[in-house]
Length: 398
Ligand SMILES: *Cc1c(COP(=O)(O)O)cnc(C)c1O
Image 1 (tube, rainbow, N blue to C red):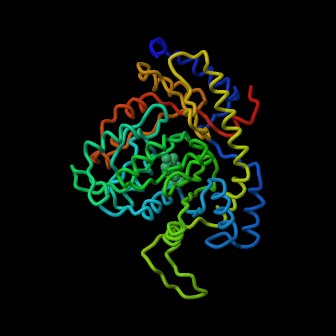
Image 2 (image 1 turned 90 degrees about the vertical axis):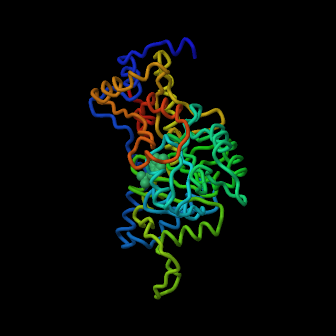
Image 3 (image 1 turned 30 degrees about the vertical axis):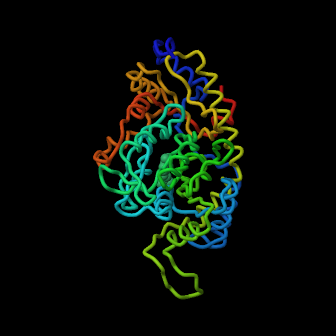
C-alpha cells in the first residue's frame, strides 16, 4: 500500500463522491431508512382486523418457518430483539454464570451486554482488517498463551474461569472468517454462537450467515436490512436447542389448554404477532433489498475510484455480503481526518458515523480480560459509515 498510504484525503472530494451516489436533494440523507414496499399494510391490517396482535397468531409461526428457510437452518425462534436473541442463544449454547465468552472488541455493545446478561464475562478479541471481524489466527496464538485444557474444556489460566464460547460478529454484514474459527473452537471445545444481527442474507463460502455456528442471533431493529419494528431471532439446526430456546423465550410454560405450569425461570421474549406480520412482508422483499444494497455498494466503489487516501469496504474474497452498511476506511496516516469528514458530511446533509467505540473503552467493560487490540484500535480510528438505505440503491438519483 506504499504510495496509497502517502495520499492525503481531500474532504471536499469525499463529500462530492457521496453526493454523486446519494443525490443532491436538500433533504437530510439518513444512514439507514426502512423500506416498506410490499404487503406490510395487508398483513398488519389482518392482525388488527382479526384481533391477533399479541402473543398468539399465525404470523409468528410463518415468520419463523420462512426465516429458517432463508437462513438454511432447521429452526428459527422469533423474539423481541436481537439482544434477547443473543442472550438466549448463549444460554442454550451452555454459557453459565462465571464463564468467560470471547467477543470482538470492535462490535455493537449488545454483543457484550448479552454475555453479561447470561452472567458471564466478555473476554475481548482483536479484529482483522480483511473482514473487520474477529481474527481467528491471532486468537489461536493468544489462546495457546493463556488457555489450558481441563477435561476437554477450555480454561483461562490467568483468571481460572472457563472459556465457554466464542461469538463472531459479521461486521456491517461482511462475514467473519469462519473456517479457521470453527477449527479453533473444535480444538478448544468452545461453543460458537454467531452474532449475525447485521448479516441476514450474507454468505460465507456459499453458506448463509447464521447457519454456521451451533446457534445464532439475528436482529430486525429498524436500521437492519429488514425490520419488524423491533425484533430478533435465534437460529439453530439442533431440535433440542430450538425447543429450549422456544421454551425460555415464552415463560417456559408447559403446553396445556388451560393450566399454568412452568418448567423454568424463563423470559417473556416472544415476538408479537403484529411485528411478525411486518417481518413476513419484509422477508418477501429480501431478494430485492439484497440486490439494491449490492447496487449501492457498486455505486460507491465507482464514485470513490478517484478519491485518494481511503477505500470503500467491499466483501471479503470468500464471502457474498448483504452490504447492510457501507463504510469507508481511511488509509493509515489519514485517521486524523476522520472527524473533519464527519463534521463536513453531517454538516452538509449527508449522515455519516464512526464505528462503535471499542468495548474495552466502555466503563463497564474496561476491566475485562483482553488481548492486544492494535488492529481494532486502528480500524476504529479509520472507519466511517455512509448512507446505506435500500432506496438509495433502487433509485436513479442524480
Ligand atoms: C443490532 C445489533 C444487535 C442487537 O440487536 P437489537 O435488536 O438492537 O437488540 C446485536 N449485535 C449487533 C452486532 C447488532 O448490530
